[in-house]
Structure formats: C-alpha cells, structure tokens
Image 1 (cartoon, rainbow, N blue to C red):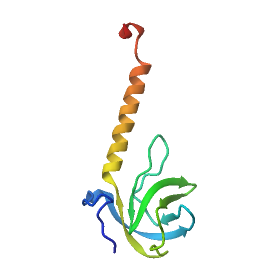
Image 2: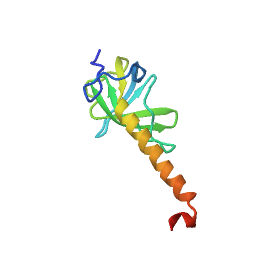
Image 3: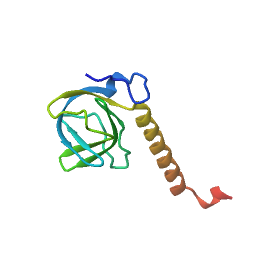
Length: 120
C-alpha cells in the first residue's frame, strides 16, 4: 500500500480516502488510469476536476468519458492493472474550487439582478 497522505503532506479527511482497484492503464504523454470505483469528481457541469493521488501517482485531471471516469496522472509506471491502491482526494483543492464556484455564481447573480438605480 501507498502512503495515504495528500500531495501537500497532511493527512486528508477520512471521507476523502478510499481503496480502489486499477482496471485499466492507458499509456501516453498524459497516462490515463481507470478504477473500479472512484471518489474523484470529473470536470463538467460547472465543476473543476478533483486532484489527488492513486497510490504513488498524482492525479492532475479527471474527465467523464462515456461510462468511464478517466484519471489523468503524472506517471502510471508504478501502477499495475488488478492491484488495489490507496486513493486520496486533495481536500484543500476541492474546497478552494467550491469557494471559487460559489463566488463566481454570486457575482454573476448580483450583476444579473442589479437595477440601474443601484449603480448611481
């Protein structure tokens, strides 16, 4: 098993930890890893993709690809199909993205509902 600390070295919240089996590794310049189950939110629906770790591999992007979730990693060299690995979400990143999304929605809402007399 891999160290379950997040990419910043602090212990992640238990809700952001899991164990999952690697079901596929697609090699390439940006390797893709597929898991039997995942905690990672993919990019989409006005949401930024999660970041974190799958075993020793840093997850840098996540997308929905049909019925699959593709986890783009920095390197897949140490990952073996059929093996279980610790999976951890970067909770700080998820929090920062949620706050940014909320603030952007709030600003957009305020602009849409601004009356001309409010700008004088």
